[in-house]
Image (cartoon, rainbow, N blue to C red; front, side, top):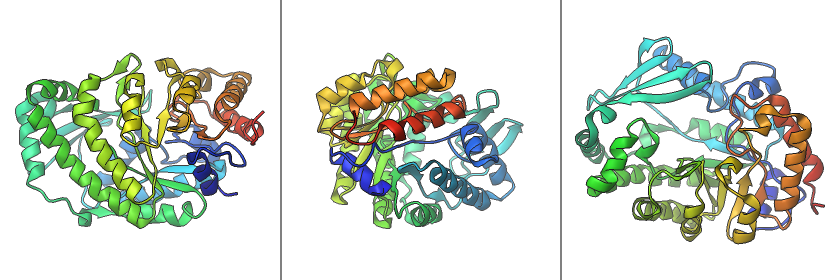
Length: 388
């Protein structure tokens, strides 16, 4: 049984030969530890920010994307993971940043003059938006951006699908390959305050902003599905550890109707849709199921997400993915604790299918390679069906 067959059985809520393994991204140092060399894998700030921006400035971005795909392919093959989640086209004409400091860049749209500032934090290897014209200009600036986006007609000609094709050629034969599609939310950026104020004071503007992004998302989603990806996942975070970033009522008004359109498109192709979010989203799970979402990741223990209870409540309605805590045991260990946590999780949730093992978010730079490898090793030892 290959990975693709194994995962499809899990999504059918059936038992395969063993519990499938899943990971959103794997950063250095784990990727470098496994491959024995520096890599461009993952969501870390060095790979996603520092090296990418350097490639943009030096006009070597094509080589950057090629190396990033090669590193991912080698890593997924070395770890024998069952699902690859990062199949995405890249812009043909990306914005080239202005270097403000060794770790800070400014991106400016030449047509609108709107700008963002990003920063890499070497100590934590994170890369974030730290300022923007939207943050400074508030709702009037969001209105100006929305009008500019509405005046543009999204086109597939603006995107290079070469990286997707290389992933499908190398990993797609026997592994499940996922593209990315979600409802765009400004509440996850540096201008979150503007977006949240807009939900109350300018709902029509927020609807327009979300719709113009959704139009492009649906175009790219259909292109990816036609190209052969096996499904889609959405990675926009909805919550903190205390609960959703804004009220469930507003999620039902602004987010779920658009999410349903993405999910329906996937289902027309016979492809599953997986929703990832950090935080405590217990109050949104019934809506998630009603929207037709097939699977839910990452199910953070420290955010009050009880995966055993979720298995009881949503056993045949929602595939569960994740839950090995990447904020505690995969950072601090020891190996014995990792093995105990992983084994207990598999025994509690895997019987009957409908479960894929992964971390409770991703293999971020703080995860110790030896602990992540212990998690995978335990999965191979304990996760053979029938699970005892």
